Length: 173
Ligand SMILES: [Zn+2]
Image (cartoon, rainbow, N blue to C red):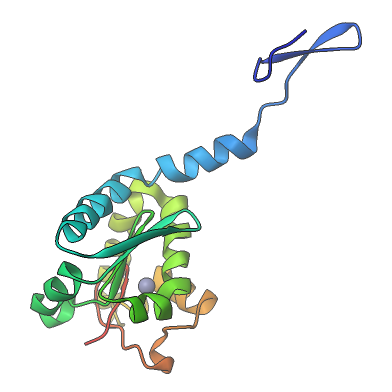
């Protein structure tokens, strides 16, 4: 008799190696690989929560909006101002309406974090600088943003949300 979770199963009259559960491992890895950025997002989320921000978990992503986030974003210099930003599995937004508008776009960034892990932000910045150095738009021509706008046109510039140069964020100025 084999215990559940044991690496071997008694089947028929012989022991068989239990198939490695790649689905579970892949799910764990999806959260571990971008964990450094998720932790940064959690620190900001906790600070925002302490002064009244709202948060909830939706499809495995912590979404935070309001309070400190809106006030803090308004104080940023214009090129850095944003309405929503994704850090690993944390999405920070200035308010609920904005969060609703850009949710699909930010989910694409979550998937990008899952693929690139801790390398996502450095890769994003390098690509933005590369586009800017070639005379292109650092934000709109960034391949990560192009993918996000292609897969989730909601919140795109054509629909009224005006992105500006920066990193992994949908911005309104
Ligand atoms: Zn974006």
